[in-house]
Length: 389
Image (cartoon, rainbow, N blue to C red; front, top):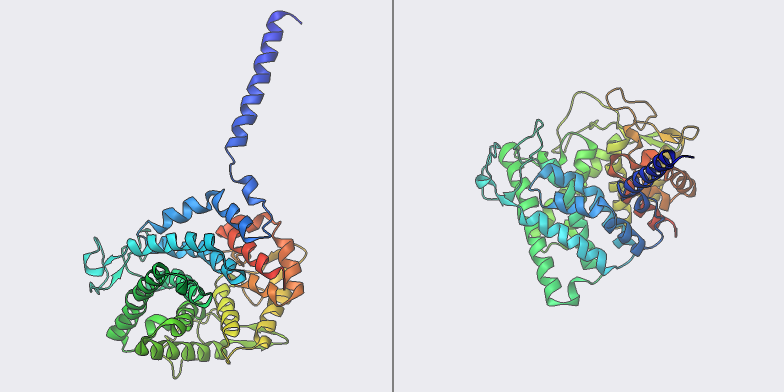
């Protein structure tokens, strides 16, 4: 080999080394995503060593109600871990996000470019994303995130964290007061101002009402405000009635419409266009039923949970393809095909009650589809909680 050929070979070898180096540093999260979470500490490692924490903190400081809605995928994972065991580090990470969200709230009538009709003195946020709700205060978006935050406040009280110090008590009281006034009272007041009812909370679909029913369930337990206690009780009662009317028994499974079938005697809105419940939004209904059952709500039993598990196993899951149907009756969606593969918010919780569901979910965790819809952190946290059952 002449000197020129030798030099060219050396250059090419160095190019390959440099190329491989840059490839390795351009995928900083690949190893974090493959971590098998078996402890809360490993969960925190996955959260902190990847983009999850950076993205979550940025969203929590965004002043954007739409971003807060998507943030629920992260904080729901914190709720799951805290359901499993007391962990101070998880609590501190959660508190940071909650503080960021609340600190960005502004008086409604002073929010720049707020085009909503209320313009009152309640604190809140508008949606900055360019969509049909742009620059509007949206009760649905707030309910997504504050369901998780209200659950967090309930967890802190239930696990004894609040009584550990005066600082803890002060933070909890301040945060609860904000939720009572600027989440619950705000939307109840606005709903009655427009409709003289709880329509803003119960809405027209099962998954929309599930968020406020969940907030009501936890808030009823932790508030000392008698008016709020009575209001939250009514919301749970009405939502349970609406949902019971929707759930149809098919063999040993449940199938239901997302639009309410019968709103008589409630403050819900009747949508005349019946829509089958999609699997993705059904997450919220499944989450509510399981949470209500675990909470001791007599309207929900283990049989209800088991029927949901059967829906998951026998109707939604496609074992051959290791995928999930778009709708709870096993049909596909023309508008959003493949969306049924987002199952981490509620369906995964069934793994704690059904070994076959757990087997399906442990298989699906290796499917590349899992990384879609920002669901991996919540999914793995749920499987961790289910692994000991």
